[in-house]
Image (cartoon, rainbow, N blue to C red; front, side, top):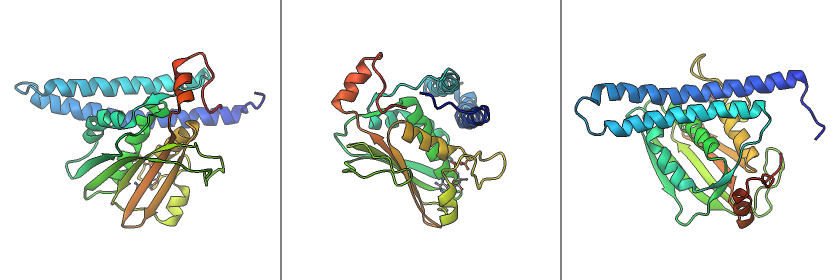
Length: 261
Ligand code: ADP
């Protein structure tokens, strides 16, 4: 492909990605530090200490995977999507997600039974979910419930309203819903822009939603935001279901990745 990024665009892209990685590492480190503190208190007598050590190791591995993404970008290597059992991935991620929430915020998960797998990069899906849950938490300073839903849809020829690209024939939809501050129409219209944030300096980088959007697009899906001030926000990530050919492709690592660049 001849379309090359200009030097300025490349620097901007690297900056965006680096900022995003820093943002995500920051979220993961909250988990590492939170568990380390708990461990410190509990290690003496509690048998549950082992699980917390596992969480620390899991978060550290994810942080390492993020730096791997940075290196993959530098080498211009696309990430490998594969067939992912999304409800199982969410279930495994729950302890990590819960560690980033105060006691006043609870997390509920509801998955439609019998869902097909999705064709995505599982590490990127985890990071996107962590970002959405952190946003939902920040929108509910007095606490509340965050609902994660996993469902299925056949978009029937519909296209992404943001860029007009057709949606996959079969989609898994992962939604994160809060009952928090919500967004004004103006904030909603800018929320996916890189570096747009309404949070105080140090609290927000404005990269969580744009990274989640980038992940959804890269996977061949899209993102929908719906929000009402003082009522709450729902973010839906549409991901392509793993069709039989996609599973066959995933089984042959030398084959071209689905969806193209
Ligand atoms: P950041 O969280 O670092 O600000 P994001 O890209 O994730 O970056 O979000 C951009 C902005 O969108 C936030 O600053 C906030 O104004 C708004 N936003 C995102 N998620 C929510 C939510 N669940 N509820 C209310 N506002 C939100």
